[in-house]
Length: 323
Ligand code: NAP
Ligand code: L37
Image 1: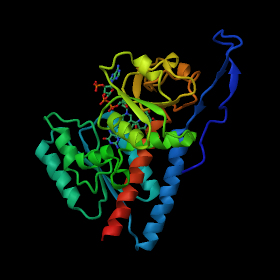
Image 2: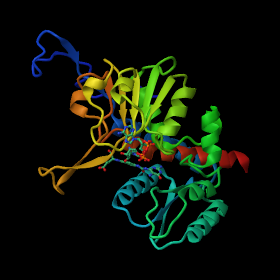
Image 3: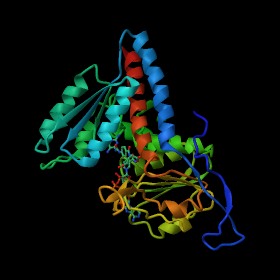
Image 4: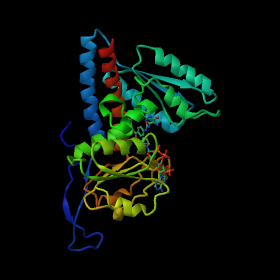
């Protein structure tokens, strides 16, 4: 879609003196910037929304982010979604329910948003933060499939698993990962892709997307034996395990494309707040082996936000075609 967005100090071939491997040529990975790529996507979406607004007399795509409770991480992610929406011209609302909300109250709120014709996208920010037991599967399946811009309902997940990609909403994080892989110029078809994680929001849809882009896909999880061995066969590796710096550089195949979804907070006394964010990949060592790598922060995270905007604009376009 766009030309590659890479760090300027990239694709260098260096002699690896620091690690004592004199004479062995090693390459430093090309960094794929999610910050830059997401900005390009958001700029394109702003143009599309401006066109819609002038063509359909003031029309704006509408998005609701429904939050139950008050998790700090969710608050941070939701605020960047609202900021991105405002920049693009999407009319976004944050609906907050207290952590005492019952399953029935959440369902009633979803039903009323489902029926509101000025809302084209509805997401329920996960995980739910409630003192009551709420079945999150029931909640995600109650979002109208036409407004399910997180792509987490069975209808959209089923279409994706069958390869009906142009007729569903693709979950934001895996969709963002695919966009970052596209940035590398490495074609997915015919490659061996390894996904670590099988969650509904990251690993499982990532597997489907890679498969229907014609990779041969191995999906690993907590019961997979010999994870380093599986990783070593990956031309393309996508990691969504939630384990700080678990994947080490020496596990990787030389030149692999490494996409790190992990967001983990680890103690760091040198930082304000006493912690810092790292991915699921040990960046410094992976950088010595990979061909391309996404940083954390500034990699997959901003793409998750951009892809939510993309799905919302797409939903509004489908709405305009239906009316
Ligand atoms: P999750 O629901 O906890 O799923 C984690 C998956 O990783 C599970 O399938 C689990 O296996 C697997 N796993 C855990 N430990 C493993 C190990 N040692 N070896 C192999 N597999 C292992 O988490 P999630 O919601 O998918 O999120 C994963 C990571 O991505 C987290 O760090 C999260 O913060 C991050 N995330 C980032 C974004 C973004 O925009 N950047 C968006 C969503 C999530 P089992 O199925 O066997 O338990
Ligand atoms: N669409 N996304 C959707 N639906 C959900 O239910 N949970 C969830 C979800 N996840 C989500 O929003 N994740 C997310 C994660 C990271 C960022 C944005 C969204 C992000 O922008 N991260 C920054 C900063 C990381 C930090 O400092 O904590 C980054 O650069 O990675």
